[in-house]
Image (cartoon, rainbow over all chains, first blue to last red):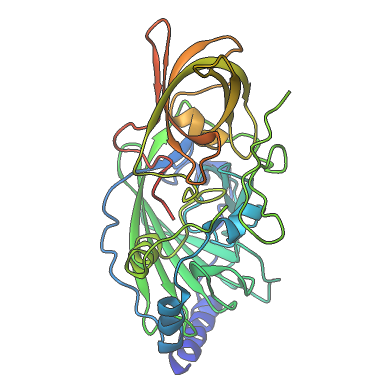
Length: 233
Length: 138
């Protein structure tokens, strides 16, 4: 717990002294690295420096004891984004004081990254948490806290609201975005965990409507996994 | 449907692979047998270009002349577009040869892999380099 307290104090201290990153004009926005223009599609391949996460003993024991998991019982089958925001980029849009990441896989999701403050304040807990961002050269740095307790770090491992995420986004080649994610959670991990994802920009694709209630054939019945195979007329 | 069975070692491997976030999918694909593919010929009954997943229904005629509709789940709209599918990809009456991962419970359904049309054009969900629906994903 001491590490968490220290991390929090350092973050608060930094927030009190660092300037906000919002632009004062659209001309300034035009100077930012351009992450806009289409849908970012995650690329298959090794996940950078991903290594085994170091779980606290209670979580490691729970994972070992879980046995087979019926994934249909996880949140997504009920349109609930319990996996959090970190691989939901979709399409990126800029305003002068915010960056939005709008994704359309399975359900509509919006990440609002605040550039007009470095202080999280006291936000309502949410599925995607509260994100503040700033530019370090050509790298967008995003700091996220305040998750709902059920948002998970691994299947069936809720973060209990204590997850802290730091992401670094940068273009490593034309239309190629690298996202380095470092997560810390003293209730789940013994040390922070980092992994890297890469995305290609598909300029021919754009975010679209994704309300999953339209034709959801995957809802569990009586708590059990179920796939409705009733043929349409 | 029986809960999908995966070994603890596989569970650990999956947990590591997917950490910190679950792979993006409305639901997992373990109700499908990713180790097997089945190929059937039939006629498109209807094509549901819908959220959260796109469904293809194909009428298949057996040796006795009985017509059975098979329900084939494809992907979410966004992923389907990325893989070359759109709302006009299938029309009722299209004759296709369909390849899919069958349901483990034996019902007439599966997860889309590929469709070959009578004119020879193909829709294939297995292009290299893109994170596509994974029949073995947790």
